[in-house]
Length: 431
Image (cartoon, rainbow, N blue to C red):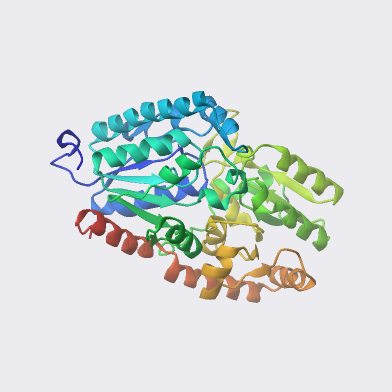
């Protein structure tokens, strides 16, 4: 059990979210914010622990060593992946850092009187080995009710397939503990977790607030096209993802090249850097050779509308969606696919490469998309042209997808799932 000093009496609804990063528009940051938003009306207050944070400092704890980008963590990752043995000194470094991080977890829980931990991806993908160990030891020592929200597992990534830390991966990614409830975001992950670890999980898909439609464009966002150099008559084809190889952005470039229409502009909203900059360089070269007008606009996009350091307006991702004519989502692999859900929510037609989770979990529900199966076909190209030219056909497609989103991926679905999950952990009904 949690030590009595860490068990607040007056307020039993304090949730501590823990991850390497809560900032920006990555899937982990977005989904954790939605969980907090859904729980808030039921009396739950959320607090945040991470190595990179853009949350309110009054309800968060910044611990630089919790970031996967911290120099010491980056040095550990460079030494332990891609080889089969590690030095004695490296073992000591990992465990020393985990002890330090465990101390900060005790501080976090005590400072904010946390009752439930929600660990976002830090116990499934080893971007920060010491943090995973620290969390495992902390949960064992305290027995604090914990939800492990697993977006990506290490066995799903090639770069973790060879390592000198199989003992740590087995112990902490994820651990199997009495007070830890596992949550997966797709059926394949749930099956793999059961097979590898012998534990069940609650499947909670990514969601959006389909009960409250996106508001129409307003004055603030009305000049977005002008600001990023796109004319009113241009066709804005949106790639709303990070610039990393598994997003398959080269297929989007190929699509625009095949359309062979100078009005088509391919706009990428997110930044590169999580996995290096070489992929972005390759995309720029590819687009130039194919005469595709490719725009990287991440410097003009922020989590919220605001003014940048240079005095220029920054727009939200939703502002860009409002102006999009077509969304491309040609990913090779996704744990779920937030951008696909966003396209449904914003009532935009979307080109989808049929990745495994889409085939297993999303496609059977009846969503209407323009499909690809690894490569662009004449049929897919013809469907894109029809969607762009036939307004009635396009409207029927996006309206159909929005209604299905209400049924399967709304906040109402998340609320129901969290109600069951928290009752299993604490015996408390949140409604």
